[in-house]
Structures are given as C-alpha cells and as structure tokens.
Length: 101
Image (cartoon, rainbow, N blue to C red; front, side, top):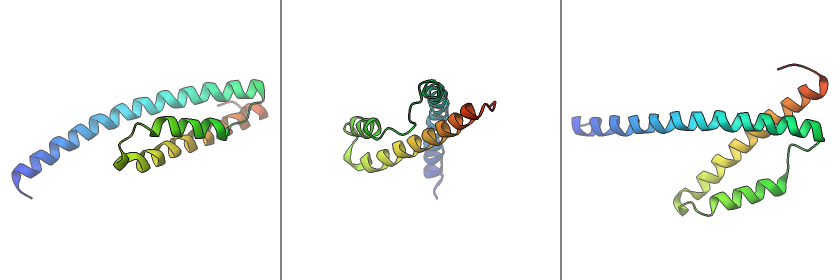
C-alpha cells in the first residue's frame, strides 16, 4: 500500500474510532434506560417482548436510511433490541427471584 493510502486509511480509522467511542457512550445510555424499563416492567408485570412496538420502531427508524444501508441498519437495530431484551429478561428474572445485581 502506498504511503499516501496508508495515511488516508489511518485518518479514516481514527474517525471510525471516534464514532465507535460515541456509539459506546450511546449504547451504555440505552442499556441504562433498558434497566429502568425492566424495573418498571417488574413492578407492572409487563412483558419484555412487545412485537408491535418493535415493528413500529424498526419501520420508523429505517424509513429515513439510504437504501444501500437500510438492510444493514435494520440488522444493527435488531441486534440492539435482542441485547436489550436479553438484558431485561435477565433483570426481571433476578428481580422476581429477589436476587441483587
């Protein structure tokens, strides 16, 4: 790889690293909110999985994504939702059994 290309690649990777740090912070914030949702659902006997809400969310968020990224973005969202549901399910299980975090 030419030196110019290596410098350009390093600059792009630095920008990706910056985005990754921002995504990390947003992920942690989202998980904190998932924690709050799980606690509320434990008090109200709510279900973790709500297919209607999930479908609405995916449709609403994916509509404004460029077509070339839309399928990948939907996969990204589904993975985040899966992680959140798994976390909430485990949290609810612990809350219902009286276990502490």
